[in-house]
Structures are given as structure tokens and as C-alpha cells.
Image 1 (cartoon, rainbow, N blue to C red):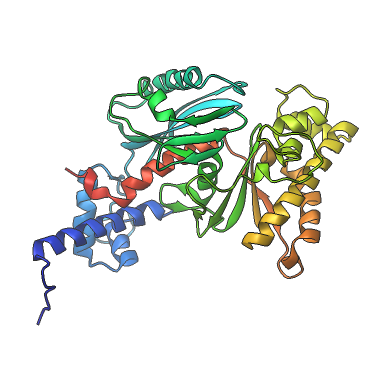
Image 2: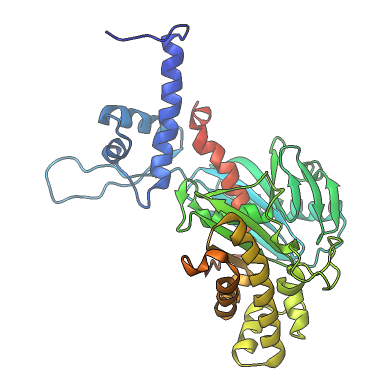
Length: 400
């Protein structure tokens, strides 16, 4: 005898089950490293083949899944139809940093559909003018989208303390911005109805390490991430999710490593980014501030004294700051991004020595340093991934 829930209409329960199962099927396909058949989905999720096929058909009809051409198989029977995430659904990721502007569109498969990155020194810039320039950059990117592309939303990565729920950039020391509502300044430069969700740049960049593509886990699940830009941002990731209170945490660049050190734009002294930020490193090495990190690495590898000294000071400062973080959060893996990733081969030996000496648990679980060299403006990619998360969570809303 089937037991019914009191006060819950059968149709409502069925609708809830359908909504949940649609999300499960979509996430299963997105998490896979290759195409799945409807039978594969049934096997992974535990659904019956008929249920998995019916839900997959709905997602295909709605464009959330795409069918690939069947591959002939050397056996009897009809070959299975491979399913992959739908290419039509896309999200816009934006980034405004002290050293660049970026606009990038990413689809549900994790592919970059269109992008533009514009380097520049934006320290102390006027927010309205800078965000207008970002809007112009975005307009150019959107003209490159396929005609059938469906843009579901936009995210904006900003360096500093962000109240994401309120949509306010509270403070970005390197930009010189504070108490700002960037979405309002951007609204006139973006398509009507396209809402912009704010996020901390380092948090969003860390997401690109934890998540290779929408819904697909990356190789590292628990780590401390450092975003190397003009300054230094940071994030702590546990189980593939950024921890902290929505952009209020992870300001590793403003951890004090030398109380008697130089003054920082944040108001403190001796902050990490004054030793390991891109501009700080280049100044210490006696190089122009637009020098690529790769050039600094080549000089240091060749034994040029100023370059070697700059990297040694950076490794020391990183060791002091990160040892404190690792001792507090207990995560022994450090992931370097941005310019720090480009310098990782030279920083890693000294940095790991400092961590081994300063981290209490190093005797049993030695900290390791890995790097994720990738395209510039990883925060923009993370902003797009954050927007696409809503598609994975609520696919039923996208199906007419």
C-alpha cells in the first residue's frame, strides 16, 4: 500500500521530484569527463532507464543538453546517442582589476565563446569611467556570440571587500574605490535586463581551480588559493567550495609580514603584497612595471642579483603569510595563480622550505605548492561559472 504525505498534493510532489531529477541528470552529464548515453545516466544516478531517458529528452528539447552524432559500434543493436552540456546556454564574466579589464563569455561546456582582455593601470581610476570602458569592451564581446546563444546572466569580479548580497564594493585599496554599487554604473552599458552579480576576484578565480567547467570538479578540492595581480588576493576552498562570508574573507595580500615594513594603500604596514605583488616584485628587481613576469623569471634563472633578491624576498613573505593561514585552516595545499603561477618554479623551493619550518603539522603532512598558469583574468571566468551554477541548480526554470 502506498503511503501518502498529509497535506501534500500528489501533483506537487511529482513536480518537486521532476525538478530535482532534472537537476541531477544535468549535473551528471556536466560532471562527466566525456559524453554520456541515457543508459549511462541511469547507471550513475540509479534511475530507471525510462526515467533517465525521459528527463534527458526534456533537457535536450530545452537546449540544456546536446546530442552528438552516434558512433558506430561493432555489435548488434542501435548505438547509444552521446549527450553533452548544451552549447547554447552562456554566461558573461567581467573583471575590473587594478591592472586590467576583461569580458569573457563561457558556455555550459566550459568553453570560452568570446573574450576581450585589456591591460592597463587602473589604480586610482574613476569608477564610472572605468566601468563605462568595461561596458564598451563587453559590447564588443557580445557581438561575437552565435545567433542562437542564450545569455543567462553576468558576474563581475572585483579586487577587494565585496558585500555580494547587497551588491556593494566596500573597499578596493588598489583601485582606490569604496562604497560603490558597480552594477548600477554598468547597467547603462549592458543589454537591458542583464543583472550583474558581484564577487571577490580571488574567490571567483579560485573557483576556476575547483571547477574545470560548470559542474565538473577540478583536480584540487581543498586548498588555499593566491591570486597574483598588482596586489595579492586569496581564498580558502574546502570540498570544492570557496569558504568565508561572501567576499569578506581571504585578504591574504593584506596580512602583515613585517610590522616595520613600508606603508600599504590599505592603511597598514608591511603587507604581503608589498613584497609579492607584481609591481612590488618588479620594483625590487629594478624593472619597469609593465615587464612580463616571464622576463623576471628568466633574469632570476640566469642569476641576475636584483631579480634573485626580489624573488627571495617574495618567497620569504609568502612563507610567513601562508604559514599563518595553513596553521589556522589546516589545509596544506597552496595553489598559486596569476603572476605567481608564472614564477612558481623559482618560488616553490624556497617557499616550501619556509612553510616546512613554520607550519606546525609539516612534520606529518608537509605543505605543497602547486601552480595553475592559465589565461589572464581568471576572475572573469569564475564569475561566469558562478552565474551558470544557477542553471545547473534550477534547469526546470529554463525549460518552457
